[in-house]
Image (cartoon, rainbow, N blue to C red; front, side, top):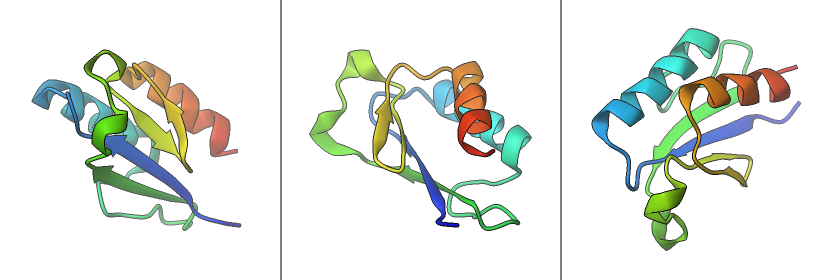
Length: 85
């Protein structure tokens, strides 16, 4: 099974937004940036995504190159449940 790459784009994020998203990932998957889940299925990366991220789209999360815009921690949990099955 290929590793699912979860990228949180750091552009236009407040510290609180970033921490809330990271807390949601930690609660669901028990990983921090740079880590892979114990089962080897999900990798978490914080990265600068470049000019493709407009302020009104943040927070922007990519899952295997598919972009999700305006992601709240609750929506991120829903997304993780969807692709971690």
